[in-house]
Length: 549
Image (tube, rainbow, N blue to C red; front, side):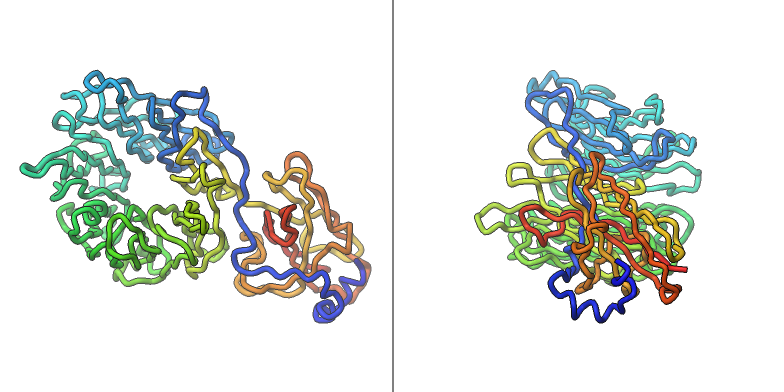
């Protein structure tokens, strides 16, 4: 160990080629599988984690919570604790009397916002169709105060089978009264002679009254809603409504329209195009916050048909784009890897994972296996640079992932619902630290490892002796830049450890008594490897630096 610290880095590379480890872009994985959470008690037939959304802290414990709609029968909505996935709130749909095999679709749409001003987010829960309100099946949206779960108020649809509550999106305060407002879709509203064109309602958050409405033109119209932040910089929240499915089915132009919250009938900006164009949206539509430093939030649009034939039954490779909130210009393009289709069908936003000050993006896609079965995959992209950081595939072809959300829980966890099976899976980032920093010569510091999914695995510690461009240490997995070469620690047993039952270990790092080392900085990170593939990284820790005094 002493010789390794004394020897200049360039001489290591010539004398230790046998233990070089080359890491490129997506090999270093910031997310690792942690655990599965089944739906309990086991129902029949088994539901899926159909719709998942993250919330901020709902109960004051400092953890981000997650809402999950479990379907099909009986439809059940639950709020789970971000700390231990315990059920904090549950509501189950009742059997509809006119359709004996159908239950209320509780949780068909939902979102979270602080509706009662107590500093904690509350639940806005859509149920469509339903058994309450002025007409059976009109649909309803209930606003519940959290963490008590007490009902604040209920808003119902206007007519029977309107399907009010099918999509719910909290958009922020659009009229300056200090209470967040929200959008609701009623997909069953008709405009004879065309049926099921749907209507979008802008609802006043303070009392559930209607502020504005938007009637569709085609069946399944206006099926994507999104909060946008303050695009027009008037101090009030703006929002977007998009035509997605109708454009694909009926061959009409799709669009994303950004409306002014202050003047809900006014369109600030519109992106439009056919289903293979940049302007078309397929579910992936969301605000990304201010990504270019001009104080105006950017937004993401994804289109799974991009690059395809134009047939609504055949997705293309897909694309997603980051647009400037100020001008509508494309700032970044997110390109799918080879053999991928459906990119841009769904998306989630992560907090900054790589320390560059910008949020990252998770996009849904499907990767061909060469056997005719595509594997649904979440692709994690660098929000600012556009590069692919990691691919997170479904666990198997029979347990395909479907809905997913990023949690701002200190670990930026990823929660994934499976298309089949009553299970939601949780992925975490690995964390690692070394203390103290700086470290005097002739001392020993512990390198603490915490990789929850890798209990019992052999952990290898690596180090580098020069700064790696673009890596703010302490906040991202190391290394993620292409072709970073590190010296393997396999020849120094003191830099390896077996992780305990909780995936933790403390690895001592001995600094030799050598004045020549004073002022030197070492960057440490570690990894576990797949037992079947010795050079395939299974989990990668976050890096920490050590400056020697």
